[in-house]
Amino acid sequence: MWHELILDAHSIYRLFIGIVIISAHLTLTKKQSLTHFNSIDFIGNFILGGIIGGIIYNQSVSTFSYVVLLLATLGMIRLFNFIASRFMPARQIVKGKAVTIINHGQFVIDSLDDASSNFDIINFTEELRSRGIFSVEDVEFAQYGSNGSLTVVKKGDGSLSYVLVSKGQVVQDQLEASGQSEEWLTRELEQQGIKLEDIFFAELEGREKIYIVMNDLTTHTFTFSLESSEKGGE
Image (spheres, rainbow, N blue to C red):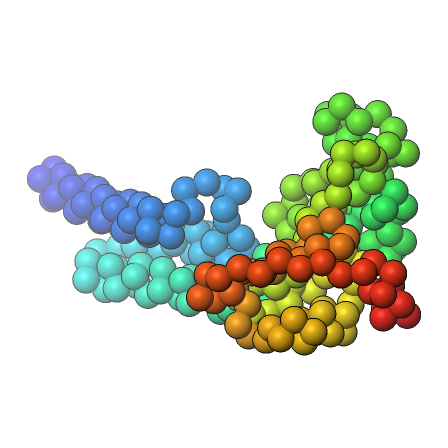
């Protein structure tokens, strides 16, 4: 009986350690909501759950080895998330790609034909109704974000902004959704004497204005001719 109580106390102690370590990790990474999780976080949570569930009753594995394994797993999760945040191609693999369904009042055929998007027109119209939009004809812009959330702009509600650059890297799906090209963006930046690698954040506001925050936190705002941009994209 005493032996069983000691084993139970030891298992509870290990469970407590696991909860403390994971809670500290979630607090430090500010990922305390499922909406903040990406595929790496979900996979990591499954692995962490398997480690805790498989080891707390296994007396052949020392508590030190158990803690090291938990910390190593958390370290790998942090490393993969860091790579995804620094390299845009890796980000799109890990966090997914935004899918534009309607742009300028027209369905985007490429998105509808893309099998990987799993677009369902019935679900789409139901989501529109839940937002008080009862006709697709009233939609100017609709896009499923990388986290699965739907962004909708009704006709007459104004223009949507697009993130063109993040930490010196072109956000390709947002650039495509804006209807512009990377060649156009490069040309506009060159005309302003701005280097891509010096940009912390660049946003296209509407269709004729770009707002830029540099790495040194200085800002630039400039407009461009919509006609010239369309000619440049031809």
